[in-house]
Image (cartoon, rainbow, N blue to C red; front, side, top):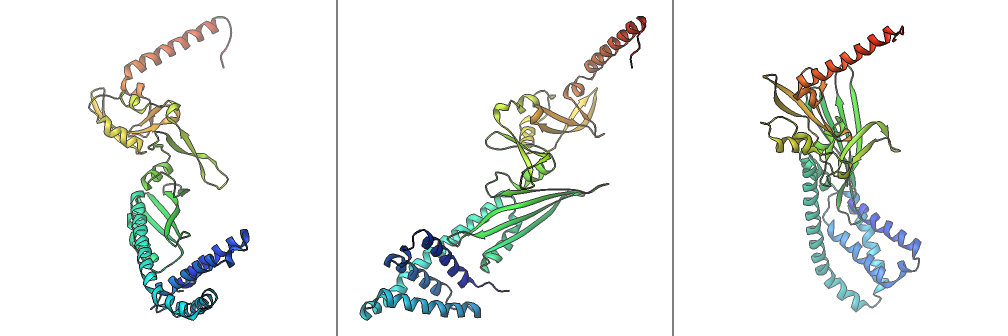
Length: 339
């Protein structure tokens, strides 16, 4: 079904006129308002002159009649009406040229915004839908991040009060395949400060740090009224010192690069020498508990102290075990039994 751009532009004016009439009934009959309406209708006629859409051409005929009635009401003097008809096209041409330039700049800004967030691959489809004059539309974006992980986005667009297009937000879903398929979804407004990569990492369960230095992480155990996961926020004064935690790691690691990856919510791979043997580990930030989570190739998470000082940890464990044995012996000696 073809979009009737003429009617869409006309309806936008009508919607505004109804709102004004509701609050200020007398305003819509005043000369200044009627002149503005006449100018707007003339712009619609000039803008879509030459359209091949039959429905748009019919709508233009109806608008032409509205223009004629407004001219007769505003300019009953035939001489003045003639002069206005003579010079108005020149003024409208300049105004339409300015509007076209503004729309082009707005579209370029929209393309830049979409690319900055991480949806550059959708720009051509967005341009095609804008060219058709669709007042509101959605654009899907999908890609695999791993063999068993897929991201799906649905971008929402619509025209604003001036007829310029804007992205109002997007829906995101992460599908994780395995013995059981898990799907996590979340909606984001256009004001959300995240990139597509941030959203992927959030849905994978990791935290990200933004320009305001606050960490954010989704709570998969809690949802808000709209059904989205609650966003946990850990501001700078919460106390998580990422640099301090990174400095606990052994030398030889590019700590600046690691810090940036963790801030972006990545699961960073590092290589450490443990008991004379080099091993690879996955590191993620855990701002809620003020620590780094380190996971070995076995999939088991370990603490920094256990990882970097295994002998010390063994000594502590042995000391604890000996203390427990001694306590057990003392209890048995007094005729008691520990269950």
